[in-house]
Length: 214
Length: 157
Picture 1: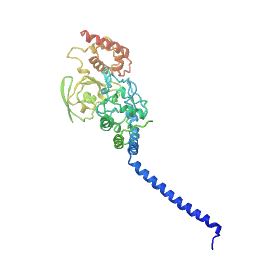
Picture 2: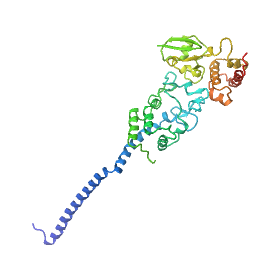
Picture 3: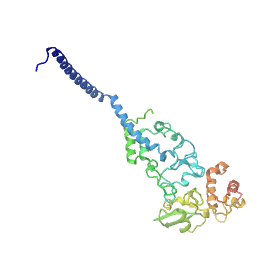
Picture 4: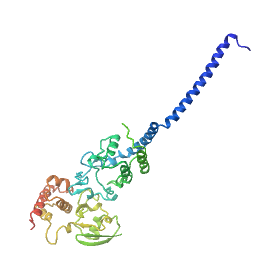
Protein backbone atom coordinates (compact mmCIF):
# COMPACT_ATOMS: atom_id res chain seq x y z
CA UNK A 1 0.00 0.00 0.00
CA UNK A 2 1.52 3.31 -0.98
CA UNK A 3 1.03 6.57 0.89
CA UNK A 4 -0.60 9.48 -0.87
CA UNK A 5 2.09 11.78 -2.24
CA UNK A 6 0.77 14.77 -0.29
CA UNK A 7 1.42 12.99 3.06
CA UNK A 8 5.11 12.35 2.46
CA UNK A 9 6.29 15.85 3.59
CA UNK A 10 4.18 15.51 6.74
CA UNK A 11 5.76 12.16 7.63
CA UNK A 12 9.23 13.53 7.02
CA UNK A 13 8.45 16.42 9.31
CA UNK A 14 7.32 14.02 12.06
CA UNK A 15 10.47 11.89 11.68
CA UNK A 16 12.69 14.97 11.86
CA UNK A 17 10.82 16.26 14.90
CA UNK A 18 11.17 12.94 16.76
CA UNK A 19 14.85 12.61 15.99
CA UNK A 20 15.50 16.22 16.96
CA UNK A 21 13.44 15.79 20.10
CA UNK A 22 15.32 12.68 21.20
CA UNK A 23 18.57 14.41 20.54
CA UNK A 24 17.44 17.39 22.56
CA UNK A 25 16.34 15.18 25.51
CA UNK A 26 19.60 13.29 25.40
CA UNK A 27 21.53 16.55 25.38
CA UNK A 28 19.52 17.93 28.27
CA UNK A 29 20.10 14.77 30.31
CA UNK A 30 23.81 14.88 29.58
CA UNK A 31 23.97 18.55 30.53
CA UNK A 32 22.10 17.85 33.75
CA UNK A 33 24.37 14.96 34.63
CA UNK A 34 27.40 17.06 33.87
CA UNK A 35 26.04 19.89 35.95
CA UNK A 36 25.32 17.53 38.83
CA UNK A 37 28.79 16.03 38.65
CA UNK A 38 30.30 19.48 38.66
CA UNK A 39 28.13 20.62 41.56
CA UNK A 40 29.04 17.61 43.71
CA UNK A 41 32.63 18.64 43.67
CA UNK A 42 32.04 22.26 44.64
CA UNK A 43 32.43 23.38 48.20
CA UNK A 44 28.91 24.83 48.30
CA UNK A 45 27.34 21.49 47.51
CA UNK A 46 29.69 19.79 49.95
CA UNK A 47 28.68 22.27 52.68
CA UNK A 48 25.02 21.65 51.99
CA UNK A 49 25.51 17.93 52.33
CA UNK A 50 27.41 18.52 55.55
CA UNK A 51 24.68 20.80 56.80
CA UNK A 52 22.09 18.14 56.07
CA UNK A 53 24.11 15.56 57.97
CA UNK A 54 24.71 17.98 60.81
CA UNK A 55 21.04 18.94 60.90
CA UNK A 56 20.04 15.30 61.15
CA UNK A 57 22.26 14.96 64.23
CA UNK A 58 21.02 18.30 65.59
CA UNK A 59 17.38 17.23 65.47
CA UNK A 60 18.03 13.98 67.29
CA UNK A 61 20.28 15.67 69.84
CA UNK A 62 17.64 18.30 70.52
CA UNK A 63 14.96 15.66 71.06
CA UNK A 64 17.07 14.77 74.10
CA UNK A 65 18.20 18.20 75.29
CA UNK A 66 14.65 19.54 75.36
CA UNK A 67 13.45 16.57 77.43
CA UNK A 68 12.40 17.17 81.04
CA UNK A 69 15.33 15.05 82.32
CA UNK A 70 17.59 17.82 81.03
CA UNK A 71 15.46 20.97 81.27
CA UNK A 72 14.29 20.36 84.86
CA UNK A 73 17.80 21.30 86.00
CA UNK A 74 18.32 24.07 83.41
CA UNK A 75 15.57 26.36 84.80
CA UNK A 76 15.17 30.00 83.89
CA UNK A 77 14.57 30.96 87.51
CA UNK A 78 16.06 30.22 90.90
CA UNK A 79 14.04 27.09 91.60
CA UNK A 80 14.80 23.68 90.16
CA UNK A 81 11.99 21.68 88.59
CA UNK A 82 11.26 18.02 89.12
CA UNK A 83 9.00 15.22 88.00
CA UNK A 84 7.37 14.24 84.76
CA UNK A 85 5.24 17.41 84.91
CA UNK A 86 8.28 19.59 85.66
CA UNK A 87 6.73 21.13 88.73
CA UNK A 88 8.75 23.47 90.95
CA UNK A 89 10.96 21.41 93.25
CA UNK A 90 9.24 20.60 96.53
CA UNK A 91 10.57 21.69 99.93
CA UNK A 92 11.31 25.28 98.90
CA UNK A 93 14.58 24.18 97.30
CA UNK A 94 16.48 27.21 95.96
CA UNK A 95 19.28 27.66 93.43
CA UNK A 96 21.66 29.32 95.89
CA UNK A 97 24.86 31.22 95.07
CA UNK A 98 26.74 28.19 93.71
CA UNK A 99 23.77 26.45 92.02
CA UNK A 100 23.94 23.84 94.78
CA UNK A 101 21.16 25.05 97.07
CA UNK A 102 20.68 27.86 99.54
CA UNK A 103 22.17 28.10 103.02
CA UNK A 104 22.26 24.77 104.78
CA UNK A 105 19.85 23.11 102.34
CA UNK A 106 22.16 21.95 99.58
CA UNK A 107 21.47 19.48 96.81
CA UNK A 108 23.55 16.98 98.76
CA UNK A 109 21.18 17.12 101.70
CA UNK A 110 19.22 14.55 99.68
CA UNK A 111 21.00 13.87 96.35
CA UNK A 112 24.22 11.86 96.23
CA UNK A 113 26.53 10.23 93.68
CA UNK A 114 23.98 7.65 92.56
CA UNK A 115 20.24 7.02 92.50
CA UNK A 116 18.65 5.87 95.71
CA UNK A 117 15.80 3.70 94.54
CA UNK A 118 14.80 2.79 98.10
CA UNK A 119 13.88 6.40 98.77
CA UNK A 120 13.17 7.41 95.16
CA UNK A 121 15.80 10.14 95.31
CA UNK A 122 17.79 10.54 92.08
CA UNK A 123 21.54 11.04 92.21
CA UNK A 124 24.66 11.34 90.05
CA UNK A 125 28.12 12.87 90.44
CA UNK A 126 28.12 16.68 90.62
CA UNK A 127 24.36 16.85 91.13
CA UNK A 128 23.52 20.55 90.81
CA UNK A 129 21.62 23.09 88.76
CA UNK A 130 23.03 24.44 85.55
CA UNK A 131 24.06 28.10 86.07
CA UNK A 132 21.37 30.65 85.29
CA UNK A 133 23.17 31.81 82.14
CA UNK A 134 22.79 28.22 80.88
CA UNK A 135 19.02 28.27 81.41
CA UNK A 136 17.14 26.32 78.72
CA UNK A 137 13.64 26.57 80.13
CA UNK A 138 11.44 28.43 77.64
CA UNK A 139 14.05 28.51 74.86
CA UNK A 140 13.59 27.05 71.38
CA UNK A 141 15.91 24.32 70.10
CA UNK A 142 17.83 26.89 68.10
CA UNK A 143 18.16 29.21 71.08
CA UNK A 144 19.38 26.34 73.25
CA UNK A 145 21.98 25.39 70.65
CA UNK A 146 23.19 28.97 70.24
CA UNK A 147 23.42 29.30 74.01
CA UNK A 148 25.28 26.00 74.24
CA UNK A 149 27.81 27.16 71.66
CA UNK A 150 28.42 30.58 73.19
CA UNK A 151 31.69 30.36 75.16
CA UNK A 152 30.74 33.48 77.10
CA UNK A 153 27.92 31.61 78.80
CA UNK A 154 28.77 27.93 78.31
CA UNK A 155 31.60 27.81 80.80
CA UNK A 156 34.22 28.69 78.20
CA UNK A 157 33.81 25.42 76.32
CA UNK A 158 34.89 25.12 72.72
CA UNK A 159 33.09 22.66 70.45
CA UNK A 160 35.31 19.75 71.49
CA UNK A 161 34.67 20.43 75.16
CA UNK A 162 30.96 20.88 74.53
CA UNK A 163 30.77 17.52 72.78
CA UNK A 164 32.73 15.91 75.60
CA UNK A 165 30.32 17.39 78.15
CA UNK A 166 27.26 16.31 76.18
CA UNK A 167 28.47 12.77 75.57
CA UNK A 168 30.59 11.86 78.59
CA UNK A 169 29.52 13.81 81.67
CA UNK A 170 27.92 11.43 84.13
CA UNK A 171 25.27 13.93 85.18
CA UNK A 172 24.19 14.31 81.53
CA UNK A 173 24.19 10.55 80.94
CA UNK A 174 22.15 10.06 84.12
CA UNK A 175 19.14 10.91 81.92
CA UNK A 176 19.22 7.30 80.67
CA UNK A 177 19.49 5.85 84.16
CA UNK A 178 17.04 8.09 86.03
CA UNK A 179 15.92 5.51 88.57
CA UNK A 180 12.50 5.50 90.16
CA UNK A 181 10.39 8.22 91.73
CA UNK A 182 9.13 8.37 95.33
CA UNK A 183 6.34 5.95 94.45
CA UNK A 184 8.70 3.48 92.84
CA UNK A 185 7.67 4.31 89.27
CA UNK A 186 10.51 4.44 86.72
CA UNK A 187 11.28 7.97 85.58
CA UNK A 188 10.76 8.68 81.89
CA UNK A 189 13.90 8.49 79.77
CA UNK A 190 14.67 10.75 76.78
CA UNK A 191 13.02 9.66 73.50
CA UNK A 192 16.35 8.68 71.89
CA UNK A 193 18.62 5.89 73.13
CA UNK A 194 21.89 6.90 74.78
CA UNK A 195 23.92 5.33 71.97
CA UNK A 196 21.92 7.07 69.25
CA UNK A 197 22.11 10.36 71.13
CA UNK A 198 25.89 10.19 71.47
CA UNK A 199 26.20 9.32 67.78
CA UNK A 200 23.87 12.21 66.91
CA UNK A 201 25.90 14.74 68.92
CA UNK A 202 29.07 13.62 67.17
CA UNK A 203 27.38 13.67 63.74
CA UNK A 204 26.16 17.19 64.42
CA UNK A 205 29.58 18.39 65.58
CA UNK A 206 31.72 16.60 63.01
CA UNK A 207 29.65 18.07 60.20
CA UNK A 208 30.07 21.65 61.27
CA UNK A 209 27.80 21.97 64.34
CA UNK A 210 25.16 23.43 62.07
CA UNK A 211 22.37 25.37 63.78
CA UNK A 212 19.34 26.04 61.61
CA UNK A 213 17.76 29.49 61.43
CA UNK A 214 14.49 28.24 62.91
CA UNK B 1 30.22 -5.29 103.53
CA UNK B 2 32.36 -3.63 106.20
CA UNK B 3 32.07 0.13 106.43
CA UNK B 4 34.10 2.30 108.78
CA UNK B 5 33.24 5.83 109.81
CA UNK B 6 33.45 8.18 112.73
CA UNK B 7 30.18 8.86 114.53
CA UNK B 8 29.85 11.38 117.34
CA UNK B 9 33.62 11.30 117.74
CA UNK B 10 33.89 7.53 117.96
CA UNK B 11 35.29 5.25 115.26
CA UNK B 12 32.85 2.54 114.22
CA UNK B 13 32.95 -0.34 111.79
CA UNK B 14 29.69 -2.01 110.77
CA UNK B 15 29.17 -5.11 108.66
CA UNK B 16 25.91 -4.59 106.80
CA UNK B 17 24.45 -4.46 103.31
CA UNK B 18 25.95 -1.30 101.79
CA UNK B 19 22.56 -0.19 100.47
CA UNK B 20 21.10 -0.05 103.98
CA UNK B 21 19.99 3.50 104.78
CA UNK B 22 22.38 5.03 107.28
CA UNK B 23 19.32 5.84 109.42
CA UNK B 24 18.76 2.14 110.17
CA UNK B 25 22.42 1.51 110.88
CA UNK B 26 22.37 4.40 113.37
CA UNK B 27 19.17 3.25 115.03
CA UNK B 28 19.33 -0.55 114.84
CA UNK B 29 23.02 -1.42 114.60
CA UNK B 30 24.48 1.36 116.74
CA UNK B 31 21.39 1.73 118.95
CA UNK B 32 21.27 5.52 118.73
CA UNK B 33 17.53 6.13 118.80
CA UNK B 34 17.50 9.93 118.72
CA UNK B 35 17.40 10.06 114.93
CA UNK B 36 13.85 9.38 113.77
CA UNK B 37 12.21 7.71 110.80
CA UNK B 38 9.53 9.86 109.21
CA UNK B 39 8.89 9.31 105.51
CA UNK B 40 11.81 7.28 104.18
CA UNK B 41 11.88 9.51 101.08
CA UNK B 42 14.10 12.43 102.15
CA UNK B 43 11.02 14.62 102.36
CA UNK B 44 10.17 15.29 106.00
CA UNK B 45 13.59 15.75 107.59
CA UNK B 46 12.96 13.75 110.78
CA UNK B 47 16.07 11.67 110.03
CA UNK B 48 18.40 14.65 109.56
CA UNK B 49 21.98 14.14 110.73
CA UNK B 50 25.29 15.75 109.80
CA UNK B 51 27.73 14.19 107.36
CA UNK B 52 30.92 16.23 107.40
CA UNK B 53 28.95 19.00 109.11
CA UNK B 54 26.31 19.24 106.39
CA UNK B 55 22.68 18.37 107.03
CA UNK B 56 21.86 15.05 105.41
CA UNK B 57 18.68 12.97 105.22
CA UNK B 58 19.91 9.67 106.63
CA UNK B 59 16.91 7.71 105.33
CA UNK B 60 18.13 8.34 101.78
CA UNK B 61 21.84 7.89 102.44
CA UNK B 62 23.19 4.39 101.74
CA UNK B 63 25.62 3.45 104.48
CA UNK B 64 28.28 2.57 101.89
CA UNK B 65 28.65 6.31 101.21
CA UNK B 66 29.58 6.86 104.86
CA UNK B 67 32.96 5.12 104.49
CA UNK B 68 35.61 7.35 106.09
CA UNK B 69 33.15 10.15 106.86
CA UNK B 70 32.51 12.11 110.06
CA UNK B 71 28.90 11.73 111.17
CA UNK B 72 27.05 13.53 113.92
CA UNK B 73 23.64 12.63 115.31
CA UNK B 74 21.54 14.44 117.89
CA UNK B 75 23.34 12.41 120.57
CA UNK B 76 26.64 13.95 119.51
CA UNK B 77 25.48 17.52 119.07
CA UNK B 78 26.53 18.62 122.55
CA UNK B 79 30.03 18.38 123.97
CA UNK B 80 29.93 16.28 127.14
CA UNK B 81 27.50 17.72 129.68
CA UNK B 82 27.37 21.13 128.05
CA UNK B 83 24.33 21.74 125.88
CA UNK B 84 24.64 22.91 122.30
CA UNK B 85 23.25 26.45 121.78
CA UNK B 86 20.45 24.94 119.72
CA UNK B 87 19.48 22.59 122.55
CA UNK B 88 19.49 25.39 125.10
CA UNK B 89 17.40 27.62 122.85
CA UNK B 90 14.94 24.79 122.25
CA UNK B 91 14.52 24.39 126.00
CA UNK B 92 14.19 28.12 126.64
CA UNK B 93 11.54 28.56 123.97
CA UNK B 94 9.75 25.32 124.91
CA UNK B 95 9.67 24.35 121.27
CA UNK B 96 8.67 20.66 121.22
CA UNK B 97 5.10 19.51 121.40
CA UNK B 98 5.03 15.79 120.63
CA UNK B 99 8.76 16.08 119.96
CA UNK B 100 9.12 13.37 117.32
CA UNK B 101 10.48 15.59 114.57
CA UNK B 102 12.56 17.86 116.79
CA UNK B 103 15.96 16.07 116.54
CA UNK B 104 15.83 16.57 112.78
CA UNK B 105 14.98 20.25 113.14
CA UNK B 106 17.73 20.76 115.70
CA UNK B 107 20.34 19.10 113.49
CA UNK B 108 19.22 21.19 110.51
CA UNK B 109 19.43 24.33 112.66
CA UNK B 110 22.91 23.46 113.93
CA UNK B 111 24.04 22.95 110.33
CA UNK B 112 22.60 26.34 109.40
CA UNK B 113 24.38 28.07 112.29
CA UNK B 114 27.64 26.42 111.24
CA UNK B 115 27.33 28.22 107.92
CA UNK B 116 25.52 31.37 108.94
CA UNK B 117 25.95 32.76 112.45
CA UNK B 118 23.13 35.30 112.06
CA UNK B 119 20.40 33.81 109.89
CA UNK B 120 17.53 36.04 108.84
CA UNK B 121 13.96 34.79 108.59
CA UNK B 122 14.57 34.31 104.88
CA UNK B 123 17.71 32.28 105.58
CA UNK B 124 15.68 30.12 107.94
CA UNK B 125 12.95 29.62 105.34
CA UNK B 126 15.54 28.65 102.72
CA UNK B 127 17.46 26.21 104.92
CA UNK B 128 15.02 24.62 107.35
CA UNK B 129 12.34 22.82 105.38
CA UNK B 130 11.57 19.93 107.71
CA UNK B 131 8.00 19.03 108.54
CA UNK B 132 6.39 19.29 111.99
CA UNK B 133 2.94 17.73 112.42
CA UNK B 134 2.38 19.77 115.59
CA UNK B 135 3.12 22.99 113.69
CA UNK B 136 5.76 24.27 116.12
CA UNK B 137 7.25 26.40 113.36
CA UNK B 138 6.62 29.73 115.10
CA UNK B 139 8.44 28.66 118.26
CA UNK B 140 11.21 27.08 116.22
CA UNK B 141 11.84 30.32 114.38
CA UNK B 142 12.19 32.13 117.71
CA UNK B 143 14.46 29.36 118.98
CA UNK B 144 16.70 29.52 115.91
CA UNK B 145 17.23 33.25 116.42
CA UNK B 146 17.81 32.61 120.13
CA UNK B 147 20.32 29.85 119.35
CA UNK B 148 22.27 32.27 117.18
CA UNK B 149 22.24 34.77 120.03
CA UNK B 150 23.46 32.16 122.50
CA UNK B 151 26.18 30.98 120.15
CA UNK B 152 27.39 34.47 119.24
CA UNK B 153 27.44 35.83 122.79
CA UNK B 154 28.59 32.81 124.79
CA UNK B 155 25.32 32.63 126.66
CA UNK B 156 25.44 28.92 127.33
CA UNK B 157 24.36 28.08 130.85
